[in-house]
Length: 467
Image (cartoon, rainbow, N blue to C red; front, side, top):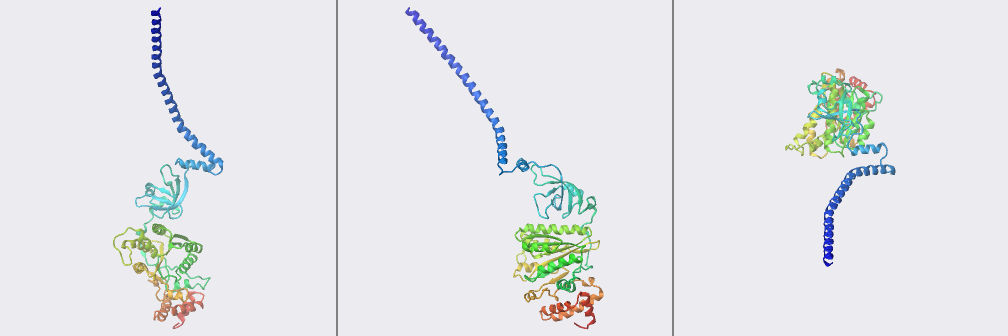
């Protein structure tokens, strides 16, 4: 009986051992299955995480739209399109602007004036070469919106160039190949309706302006330079409606720009003194290139520039240093671009003309301004001098009639008028022999007041042996 009990105990121990072994064999499998389940759950969570994040973004945007503070409707769609960097619409749109062409052949169509803007259309090299486009051309065409990784819309088609057929633009002459002549057609400034406009009448007598004139208005500060410019601009518009007038204001005060825009009907291009020098030079280059394109089409263009001194200063700051410094601290290479600008004025034998009237500052106690004026002194063919002493005595217009003149004025007057003008100048020169310009100007103004027109005044001079 004891042996049987002992055997039962051994059998029970063996069964217990089998159970323990089974438990041990079962546990790893359970652990493996559990870990596999956990991995599956975690992977499911991972895949849900991306979708969930996107769902959360959409939910937040919808919530933002419902709240009233965020963008709603079409604005929300525009915002989502901007976030994904996709164009809002792929439909081509009509565009028009001035071409700013680079040396490499490509360019940008300036939609908002002459300065860069985010809506400007990119013009590929293929289109510019296909139609022979040049800097300053006014181009209309179709443009597509900017796509991924593009900063600007792109031009697809060109419809017109400078208001004419795009294909015909390839046959036009180049401005550099046109023949330059002396000005031989006068731009009358005298106002037949208002004989009291002494500024226009005096300029017509002592320094007449012709089509293609390269004139320089020499003025000290506070001598009435801006008033003279406005008078010339309005007189040209009134008496010569076929002339295209452009007023270019560089480094000017904003209120002066507003005043000029309200006074002149023509195009006023400006870059105020609070803008960088690079912007001054860019505006000037686009303006002169635009004028050249019009002259190539046979049009008469007048540019009134205020002023050549400030433009030269802007180029001195913006241009890379050449290492050669002139007196006054101006770089030798900085004077070439403004000279090229001023030298573009010419009367063209093939038709058309480009007249440039630029102001130059003197008596500013700046050696740089004096050096700039000396560089431009002999380049013009017409000079109008203003005198500060006359302005201080409140004698307006403060024009130094003896120092003001036009080269080859015999081409602008008929023979009878020319003899009378020379007679007038001899008298005025005698009155200014002591260096005081006031007596001659006062005499001229007093005599002009008694006649309605300059022709009547000159006819009266012809009758008298002396004034």
